[in-house]
Structure formats: structure tokens, C-alpha cells
Image (cartoon, rainbow, N blue to C red; front, side):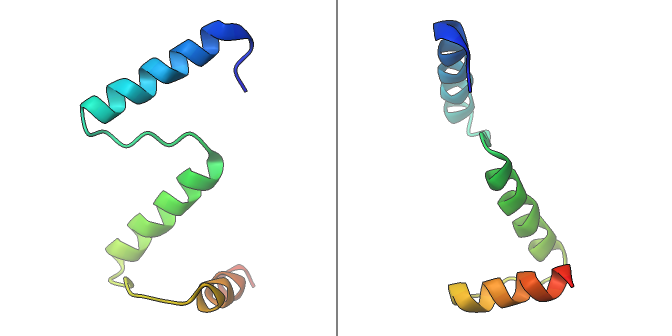
Length: 64
């Protein structure tokens, strides 16, 4: 979380520049984790449609 208004302004400028240049801007660890999972799925040809429940089962199995 930014401290004061300077950090907030910096974040706005970073996100604005990223959008203007079509560059992904990940602002949370959860978003980064989702991006990594997506890239991994693309690299392994494991892209498809799953229900949220199926996705949760897949994640649980991968962690075990």
C-alpha cells in the first residue's frame, strides 16, 4: 500500500504508461500467480475450459 500521495501518483503513472504501451501491469501477487499459471498452461498445451470447481481440484492435486 502506498504511503502518502506520492506513491499513489506513481502507481497511477505506471499503470497509465503500461496501458498506453500495451504492457501487462500486475499489481498483486495473486495476479502474478494467475499469469504464471496461464503461461505454464500455454507452454504445456494444457489450455481449456474448466469450471471453478474443476480448477480448484486441479490446484489441490498439484499441491499434494
